[in-house]
Length: 103
Length: 166
Image (cartoon, rainbow over all chains, first blue to last red; front, top):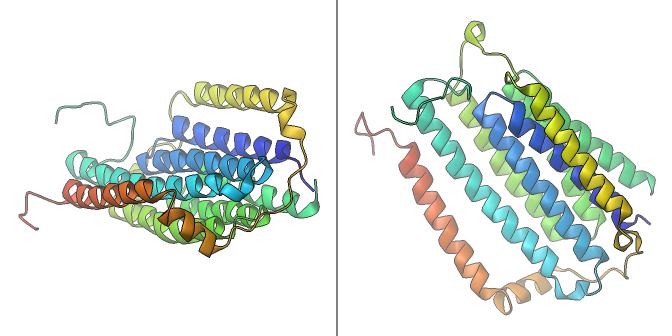
């Protein structure tokens, strides 16, 4: 059986991949996807701690992960809406060209 | 460390890494669905069936489709495509690699992360529903409010006001 360590290492690797994507991609949609990946790594941590924790019958980790997934879905919808509005304004999703707050 | 865990971990890591490094944005989202399915299978392996299927429905089903729609609505001609990575991609990679090394060092040096699991508890849908209706009823209501606000907010933000389309 796996120990908690493997899951924590995997989730930190996924978090770093998401962080790298959010930092270095130029397409705004893929930056948002990188943030979603970081949220997923946190969810994997929550589930792993629930499974290996001392009181798994309380289901706290599972419910926390479910709430976290709902918040991530809401965040994705609002974020993509903002990207669409910004694209309609500046005709680009390239973050290096989005350099003015005032239109 | 068993074989199933290794295979699922490889699927999720390769899928997410491809999603963050491919050039075509639609290919990135397709690779992302592979990686997220791997993570959902890891949830199933940990005994959290409901979370695994929620992950597949919400992420692979809804978020990926939403991202594909956004990519197609903001499509740019092939000739004017900017480079895939930002101009400071070296620094971004260094930051991500150092974050991973610090996290891996912390996990590795912690004694708490080596304990064996307790016997698998039941996490049936009925128990999750009971918990949602008793202990977690206030977070559930707040979540409903948040989702409603996010739904209305996303529609209002993405609405095209110039043409008067409501």
